[in-house]
Picture 1 (cartoon, rainbow, N blue to C red):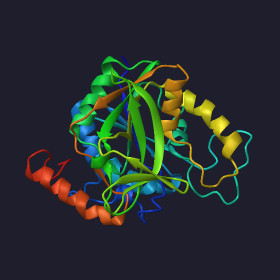
Picture 2: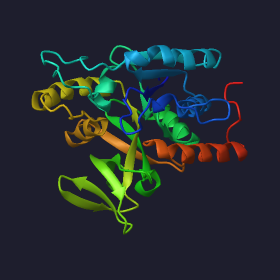
Picture 3: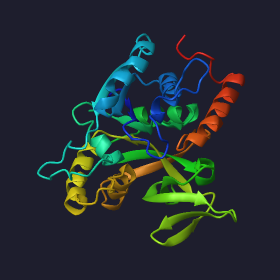
Picture 4: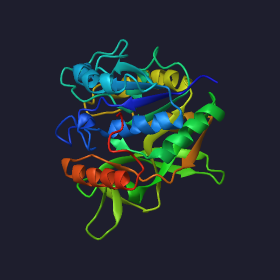
Length: 302
């Protein structure tokens, strides 16, 4: 079995957050959320990490991570998600500024990631248990017809400071995913009900709804599938400057088209993340507690 790679999605423009949140520091020795993800991944057994970034972030990323990870027994590589990448014969709209989405980011890994891999968001804290289970799956079970997604309870993934987007997971009785549906603008109303917006309609969701936090475990053929579906996506959506090509949508196609199965792996890890600036103090408090409890040292790379 080829050694799995950890892929980190870090090319988002952070429009709701208002700054480059991927490199904001939260740990006592200047650690970002990505530092904790990489640390947990190394503890789990990963030997390579690939950052998906915008080329304009390259110097900052290399300055921050190049030195601290130099002697940490993990290989580092970078790929760049640019608006004109993999458009084929399609013309980039002049007023398009928003990245094409997470599945397009995965497509940008073509030629760099050629074996099994896990993919995570740069601004989400997933916890050690998730990386241990992801690595175990990637070294023991993954194939071109079997993927996995770490599953979290929706109630544990909300922000008190605004709406979030999540992939709603439906499973069969054997914990294989039947569908992953991207839900945008999920939030808790004043009466306590969790809802998502569907046009003008508000659709309720249970607190126990299982959601994807974009922690997936894939075979390399997933990147080829992204390429195929991106071409079809562009045919329909090239003129919509806000349209996005989502990774959960490709995973959903993989299942519904009969290409294979996706196992949902439940995790005991506590998720937290920074969608909004107001989330930052909560993230820092959670990390401080984990350090106080001895889960992490106060300097990850010392």
